[in-house]
Image 1 (cartoon, one colour):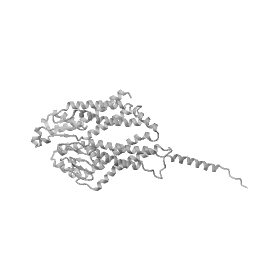
Image 2 (spheres, one colour):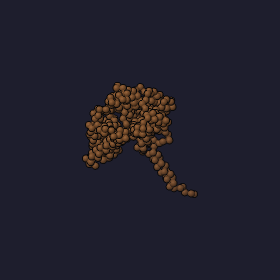
Image 3 (cartoon, one colour):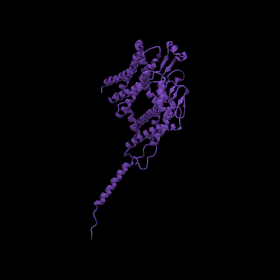
Image 4 (tube, one colour):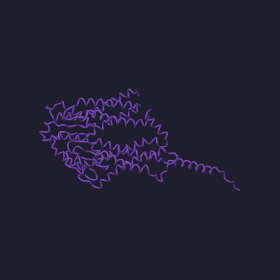
Amino acid sequence: MNRLLVALLAAFDAVLAVAVGLVAALAPLTLLWIFGFGADASWAGLWPAAGRIWQLGHLVPLAISLPEEFTVPLGIDPAAASFAISLAPLALTMFTAIFAFRSGARAATAGAWVVGVLSGAVVVVAAAAAVLATTGNDIAGVEPWQAVVLPALVYTVPALGGALAVAWQNGDDGVVDAVRVVLDRRGGAWPDVPGLIARGTAIVLTALIGAGALLLAVAVLLRGSQIIALFQSAQVDALGASVFTVGHLAYLPTFVVWAIAFIAGPGFAVGVDTVVSPVGTQVGLLPGIPVLGALPESSSPWLLLLALLPVGAGALAGWVARSQLVRDRAGAAGPEPMGARIVVTLGIAVLAGAGAALLAAVASGSIGPGTLASVGPAPGPLALTVGIESAIGAAILLLSPRGRGEPDAAEPAAAATADVATAGTEGAAEVAPRPPVD
């Protein structure tokens, strides 16, 4: 496909991703302005508020400074009138990332992934700069460079990942093929190692996300009465309840990452000097956010068994990688390559840990003043535990000797040769002349 056409299509994808994200932030705010504030509301604040929500959803921290006309009637301490909000509603982040991944994959399919990724990145930079220039206000401020760079990274990194994934499979007549040539020269199983590592890492992270979503659903079902009680204690009308619900949905992927941290072991914080983990739960006074009613009041030693889930995810990744290695070496002579299996195991562990650290980084931050300045999982501990647990599971399947009942890669050819030799012997016996009868 023509490179100019690829660039135009990628630019259109980026424009569409930004536009849909802004509409997703603007639509519920418009309803809030209509039904909540009425005819006396100033519509001049609608677009700045929507732009700030879009920026927060793309990992841009907001510096909140409440004016006196808000703090004095509500009795808010002036020291608590200025704080940061950096905990991102990952639903917006996830949408942009998925859209970018597909755009990068399409550009790679067309044979011009570099042009496609760069075109999309330039458009997002321009769109983020436009949002920054038109959403200035005195209540929620942002750092200009963060407001431009961070949304661009949220789009560009997944787009690059999608492009490289497709280019590795189909080739690109460029950098990816050059790497393949180098690996092909090494021979053996080395050409398959990068793909196996990427596939194994995707399996581990996907399994962890599924386990986190399942744990969150179970917690909501078991602690549903506490969540409803917090809804009722807020004493909000139908509009307020709708705002709470939309906010919870926007932060649903964030809560899933918190559940992953609980499963892996380190847990997460809901404030400074607090922790929620299988080992123990230590929290102070919590804000009246309904979803926080799902937090366990106490821990149990049995919850430590949840750490077996990342081990199982690593084992599944190791089984898939080992099976692919066996299929690729069908009919080859010699034992399975130990060096390649070790590299695949370490690669899965390192990349799975890095992916967990990235998830923890985007799912943590500040939601208010004082103790609320630190919520979410810590990237370092989560990366270490996920890396170790997935390494254990992957090593069990990738590095262990194969069972006696399973033929090695070289055995099928030997077995086929033996079958041919046997068949030839039997055939010769059948056609041999019988001795004469006296």
